[in-house]
Length: 242
Image 1 (spheres, helix red, strand yellow):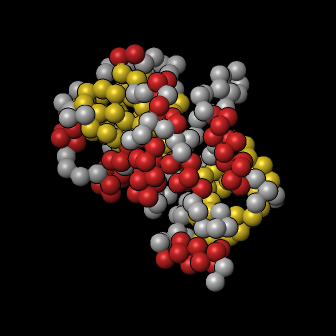
Image 2 (tube, rainbow, N blue to C red):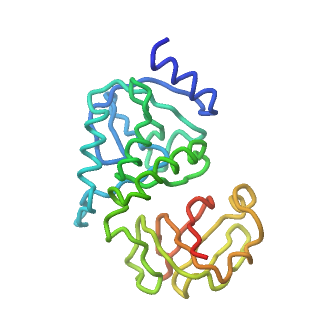
């Protein structure tokens, strides 16, 4: 049995929606590739440091992450494994990438500390395996885990300009439940946000159980009317400090 056939059967059994093979023409950055047919593919379940663009400075290890991904897949015929949602709002395909020998590309990058694991529902079937791979780098301080710039930022130091992917730290002061969203305030200007849908599907207990606890949250900070919001779809994106 070929490696690709084996892994196609494996991913199908694991609940991934479908697979296909494709050749990678170019690697755009540490988590996005371009196929020979010019389709952009965003790797599911990871986020790599950002290359400098639009005047923003390059983040530490961004080039190293891109070069490592290029070393692994550029010019290679790989297997794409899809989950529930196949396209993001930028029009990119969403897929896991496997090498011809069956290795998972996301897990390689995570083990080497060149990316962080992220949860973006509904594509979270492989999240436990990705977090396990990430932990190998985290406990040894490898890659991004050894870079001081990526240490959690206390919410008191955040400003409305501090958007993008970050780790933030603070104590949950209160929560407010609205029709679709639950807001957990870390300060007057910063809140974690959980949809009621995700709370009922992935979280346990009551929102009030979070109040008074100190937490590190990972995700994308967005600004709205002078406040920063960080969406927390799954508990795995939180590390409790108490």
